[in-house]
Image (cartoon, rainbow, N blue to C red):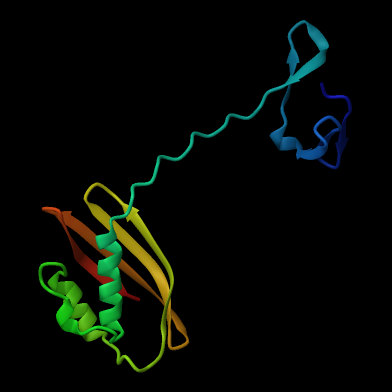
Length: 152
């Protein structure tokens, strides 16, 4: 039972709860027939988010091969046509950097899974600058293939 309820500059202080609660979050409703008694209606609890789909190991492997090839840590010949689309190979070939220019550090990698498609994006540090990348991968016949890859 709430023992002490007082207003302090737009906040309601409940001694029983031991904390200050914003007035907009607390709604006291009168009990019909009893004008001096009120009850506290709790806010509805939002539904938990749906469980995340697991990310297949091939997805992270393809992203790693693409980034390594882009920065000269792997040869371009490892981008075969069965696993990498032609647009991915041409983008990596056009933006390829020499491997001795510095250390590449992956800062973040986020993957969103859909039915048979994975969308990946993240950021990395290279030669003192931070840049972003985005990739789209698709599965067909049990094999994952990189359909699109861009370094911004």
